[in-house]
Each structure stands twice: as structure tokens, then as C-alpha cells.
Length: 423
Ligand code: HEC
Ligand code: HEC
Image 1 (cartoon, helix red, strand yellow):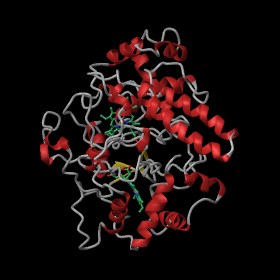
Image 2 (cartoon, protein in one colour):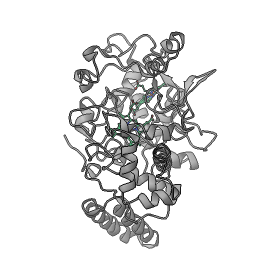
Image 3 (tube, protein in one colour):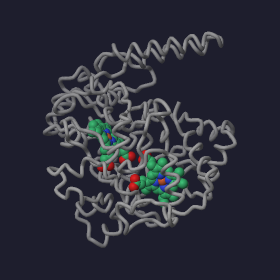
Image 4 (cartoon, helix red, strand yellow):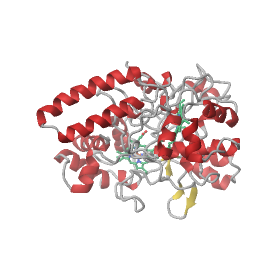
């Protein structure tokens, strides 16, 4: 099994790589065809070299396409010093090479949950992508679609405190003992104040930005959200986007996949494939919550992590309902939501560094390939299909589970999902 070169645990920002890439891109537009190939070789060498030599965050090598706040957010996102002990950046569990989710194929193949800054402490869910989630509204009960919005698989970054679920999410991991494990917001703010990008922080948020710790901590969250919403993270430049704009560019198989996705296979009922009115792009999520019946992933190390999980092997992830219960809602409100998880965007769902790299799917990473999960949607309820029981049965949707898709049709849907990879 392979593991990607781990830039993030070493604390580099990759800033030099970006500079090299953007300079080279400029040359390509002026160069002839033969030169393009030569330049690609050069880019490869340059990028491999800069992996090793990239400097710490704060080095002033910002490409023109970044705003100050986005660039500041990027420094924070890649800063491996913001954990206790140091060594784990946000990017350690959300890497661009794999579509901003977990970068370790061996982990994906097994428990699919990632280790925090403290050795041996694991989270209990698979890291979702940080991209294309920025348009999620605050968590609220919608009259037609039920609970909608918020961030995290269970919606607990509601957005109701900061007015922005993405910014609110971003200040969670720093203090989570299973993730970056800092003792308090003050500790994180003090580290940022000592960082090479402290001046940039004050440029963006004002000379007195560090004076009020609570506010400074919120500004850290807002800066990261700005980066997560930026074109650098969500460029909308997949082959699907080209097709969306021009009506061309998909193969016959992919076009069949798209029409099944929108029709017979019902995928678009939840993973919306039409333009979001606010941004004019398809986000492949409607930000609602459902239980599709994902089986338990018994390889999740959380089952034996008794300090944080006193229920041990009998623990069941209650998703949205679990959050609503802990937030004090009445049983009549939270009970129907137990076992439901947020519909994830499918953008970059296939993105991986090479074809043999394994990615995990679903909130607990039970599925190990797109073929697997599509086959599950198609046959979950077919007698003799052999799927294990769902992790939580009571709230399971019957909208999917027996779609009558042929093998050719399943394959076409998988082919279509692969067109959602950013270039
Ligand atoms: C140890 C691994 C780990 C680290 C470090 C980490 N995350 Fe995550 N991230 C996760 C997991 C796991 C989830 C899902 C947790 C859940 O839903 O309960 C998640 C969820 C998210 C989401 C929600 C996406 C969605 O669609 O709801 C965003 C955004 C995010 N992380 C950004 C960040 C940022 C910003 C940082 C740094 C401040 C960070 N993460 C650090 C593992 C990690
Ligand atoms: C009724 C709503 C609904 C429909 C219909 C639906 N999905 Fe999903 N999808 C979800 C939810 C909810 C999840 C997360 C479930 C979980 O993890 O427990 C999910 C997860 C996924 C994932 C995993 C993504 C990840 O990053 O882990 C993929 C891939 C996916 N769906 C593809 C499809 C395809 C393809 C179809 C059509 C065959 C489809 N979905 C139909 C609601 C739906």
C-alpha cells in the first residue's frame, strides 16, 4: 500500500510549487506544441524539486490569483505548527491530490479514519472534502426537504454562531483532542501571533487583530473558510464543467452515465446536478441529510478507543439525530434524524494520484471503490445480494436500494462520476 509524500506533516506550505506552476503556465500559452511537452517535463521536475525545498508558510510567493485573505487562509490550513504536539496541519487529513480528503490509501482500505496529532488517537468518521461545501446554508429545518445545511457529516457546525458554517467548522479541529488537540483558542491564537504570517494576519484583520483572543480565533476560522471557498480549492474546471458550459466533451458512456444519474438511478434527487441558483454551478449535493443504509465499518479503530468511546464495539454513529439530541432538541425532533448523514458533494469523488490508490466512501469509509457504492445503491434491497445490515436501520431511505440497473449501466454511472475530477 502506498502513502503520499506527506508535505503537511513536515510543515511546508507548498508555496514555491505554486509559484513555479504559475510561471510555467504563462510560458505554455506562448509556446508551440513541441515546447509544451518539454515544459511539462520541466514542470514535473520543478514540482518534484520544490516538494523538497518548499519553505515555511508566510514566504511571500503568492500568485496573483489569491486575495490577501485567501492567502492567509492557505497559510493557516497548511501550518503543521498549529497542533499539539506540532506536526499535523488541516491538510494532513484534507489533501488536494485526493480531492481534499484523507491522503493515505492504507488507512482508506481499512478503518478510513485518520490519526490526530496525538499518536494512537483516531477520529470516528472519514474526512469529507473541504471543497465545494462553502454554499451550505446554516443548519435549519426546511419545510419540504427536512434538515438542511451546516457542516460535518452530522451538521454540528451549524453556522448559527458565526453566521457561516464553513468558518465555524474551521475552528473545530484545532481544539478537538482527536485532531489537532490544542488546549484552548488562546493557544492557537498565540501560535499564529508567533508565525511568519502574523503580519499578513494584521494586514487582513487590522493592527489590533490579536488583542481580543476570542475574536482573533474567529478570524482564523473566517480566513480558512475564505481559502476553502477560493478558486484554488474549487476551480470548477472538471470535464463535466466543460460539458456543462459547451454541451460537448463527454464520451457516449459518460453521457449515458449522466442521464442515468439524473433519471433511472435517481442520484440527482440528492446529489443535485443542475446549477445552484446562487452560483450558476452544479454542486452535486442538496445539503440535506439521509440514511442510505451504509453498513458498519468494523475496522474503525474508534470501536476500541475506550477513553473516547465508552460504548466500545456497540457504538453506533447516530449522525444528525445524535447531534440534535446533544443540542437539547426534543425526542420528537431528533429521533427521526438518528442515523442520517449529510449528502456529500460528488465533485472530485474519484480524484486520486494513480489508479491503484484506494479511496474510501461513506461517512465511515465502508466502501472502497465507486463500483462498490454504485452497486450498493443498485442492489441493497435485492434478496441474496449479500450486503451486511445497515449501521442503523430505523431511518433508512427506501428511495434507493433496488434500481434495476444493468452492469453496463452501473459502469456508465461510475464513468460519469470520474468526469467530476478537477484538472
Ligand atoms: C485528524 C484528521 C483531521 C484534521 C487534522 C482536520 N480534519 Fe477536517 N475533517 C476530518 C473528519 C474526520 C471530518 C468529518 C468529521 C465529522 O463529520 O464528524 C472533517 C470534516 C471537515 C469539514 C466538513 C466538510 C463537510 O462537507 O461537512 C471541513 C470543511 C474540514 N474538515 C476542514 C478542516 C480544517 C479547516 C482543518 C484544520 C483547522 C481540519 N479540517 C483538520 C478530519 C480532519
Ligand atoms: C436519497 C438521497 C441519495 C440518493 C438518491 C443518492 N445518494 Fe449518494 N449519498 C447520499 C448520502 C446521504 C450519502 C452519505 C451517506 C453516509 O455516508 O452515510 C451519500 C454518499 C455517496 C457517495 C460517497 C461520497 C463520499 O465522499 O464518501 C457517493 C460516491 C454517492 N453517494 C454516489 C451516489 C450515486 C452514484 C447515486 C445514484 C446511484 C446516489 N449517490 C444516490 C444520498 C443519496
